[in-house]
Image (tube, rainbow, N blue to C red):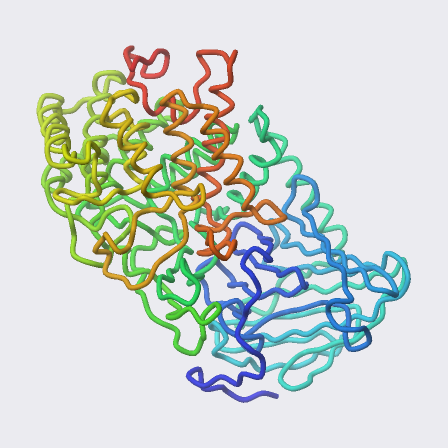
Length: 640
């Protein structure tokens, strides 16, 4: 029996987590996801959903705030260094296999969250490969991000059950479990050919009855078969097939199966700068990602996933455009109130730890352009939009008529004063442009003359106020001298022809002034009033945007060099976070980051489409988006 714990002063007998972010792997079931370290410890898991409270929160605190480790018992060895660790995903799946080799033997740990199970389940299977290896299992369950110690009991079958409020977890094991120091532990020895199984199931505490997994090995095999069937639909053909497929699998892992929503990352508050305060909750769905996501899915053969994402978009933004959020929960929730969790020390002391995201109700003009672009793209690829969808788009465009000239918080969600960001204005231009194209090329009905006038007005204003003649480049905001990596996207949205001297000069300036060790910064924090202290790493998606821009500028070889440098910072399993610390040579930011993987997929597709000898009618996302339709079908023919 265990009593309550004061969340402000949790017992802490272990130091804060210092496991490198790149040492983590992800497993998931399309409703939630777990992060597992190289040492076989699940240090992050939110149940039952991506954005629920974590029952394992050691990632952002210490081991006492929730983890589940299975590892050789180093007390009987010469310390952890006596264990050689290798790991991999089973081919074309999200099933993780970690092998521990000691002087006395070798074991394999297989981790899986089965897709389609009645309730969220984690399966862990230990198999002896040769010799003998003493093993130890430590399980520390702490609900609500490490703040609540559950009531733990055993049933007559030896299973462990933990309950606190609405949450309940049952753990079944083929080895005996016992309680010690507010933990559930087990010590056992693995011999060659031996197999031991652990199954953890979450369920609502008031609903005890559910179907138990009786054959964990068989469930893992069924899940592997499902993943390999899904992976076989990938249509990417190019030199980076394995890289692209792993990114697609990661993107799928971030997808909520029941709604089609795709979260940005399964974590919160992993810092953009180690020890800093730029720590955000990314377990939500950003509208900004919509067009890029559709391109990545459609160009890779995943039309059904693209359709589900588009349908999620339509449901999420339904209603008054004046109440549009820039991000939503996986079911389309709008209230994502941000609070701080002071009992968590933060990853490597990076505070505060946040739940929710206050940026959800900012005015960010670029999302209107992304929405219009996403629905425009879905029409071009035959993902039909009904009349209701077009009515919604018209209302969005009509609302934007009253908003485009206002300052906003921009694509980077600055927490300082709103500004007239150039990219925000450019995406407002894109919204009207795509509305005009829907009428002229797809037969929709709308006030083309009025929209054309506004579109041209925005274009002229950007060229006048967003371009600095002295610098010879576009700038971050009106009157600013600062650069911003989002200006790279002006090349591929068709705002100007890619060979326009102003765009060429802007790309060159970003390469000169916003690059660190071959990677692209979003902007220089000391030159931008973003309302936040400290600095951050290079932004990996921005580096891929540079690849895309250079391809459109005809500099494919240079683009390829930058792309291949960027994919080298993936961890050993092919996973990327949001950012990279070029000094510490470490991944930083939330992990794994969907936007980084989406951008990687699109850049790889652009490189494949731009190969010498490639069919001229086959375009990558950047080439496709930068072109303008000339025919009424909106898809058959494009011109610059």
